[in-house]
Amino acid sequence: RAKQEGRGQWCFYTTEMQQRSVRQMQLEAALRRAEERDELRLHYQPQLAVTRSGEIAGQVIGVEALIRWQHPELGMVSPGEFIPLAESSGQILAIGTWVLRTAVRQMADWVREGLAPCVVAVNLSALQFRDPGLPELVQAVLEEAGLPPEYLELELTESVAAGNPQAACAMMDRLHALGVRLSIDDFGTGFSSLNHLKRFPIHTLKIDQSFVRDITTDADDRAIVQAIIQMAHALRLTTIAEGVETDAQADFLRAHGCDMVQGYRYCRPQPPADALAWIHGQRQRAGESADKPATSPL
Ligand code: C2E
Ligand code: MG
Ligand code: MG
Ligand code: MG
Image (cartoon, rainbow, N blue to C red):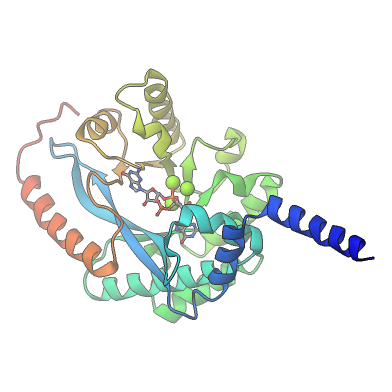
């Protein structure tokens, strides 16, 4: 009998451990209390319009909200690690609501302080997107903060359309009807059917940073980025390149008509006060360079 029990425990141990490591279980438990313990923060990364002049980056027209989790013992845990965990455990629904509410309140404060026109982009996980109550939640959060809907953009990934594109399209229509903007994040890494893409009420395609990274050296990546920009414009969509780190990448993107850029070349994601200070500085710089004649052939 003891042997059976032992074996039972062994089975439990292996299946649990194989599927989820000790670290993952630790993180999941800690994440459950992260919000109440005030361990979650949002950092904001500016998104800039591409100018026609030699100065690549002009006005800041958006900021992306990116979650940060600082745990007292585990340290800084990256969203790349804990967001997938929160998705598989369902915790992403509560965390996602916190993100939405915090970002919308922040932007409402900034608009009152004169930051307009600038949009806050919030990442939505596929699980949040499939929640039928999402449009009501978004509307309630906007009303509660007093933020007009056009100041909010929701970033979806191509995966939201997987399985049931009709339902995805219906949800996008409901969100669009609220007056918020929709964008497709990490575009090019999923398998979007172009047939669906043309019917989705979206505003922006975010070109995944994996294509931008080697844009100056890899002919395939250059071709893909050019094709995405051309297709987006043919469908009357705006493009934003993620992960822009160098002037050479920025030059290529400007030369091929990319509308916006976001990346370490300009500004890293930062706490709200630092992001705001950077944006004010950039507005002055962009204002000054706008007086100079355009030097680009575009
Ligand atoms: P994402 O939405 O595609 O965000 C872009 C990621 O690229 C961010 O990583 C950002 O910090 C990073 N990044 C920005 N500029 C550069 C650059 O020039 N070079 C490089 N190498 N990276 C750059 P982060 O903050 O670690 O977030 C990773 C992912 O986690 C996000 O990818 C998003 O999928 C997810 N995520 C972050 N915050 C949230 C959130 O509030 N909700 C949900 N559902 N997902 C989130
Ligand atoms: Mg994003
Ligand atoms: Mg992305
Ligand atoms: Mg991503």
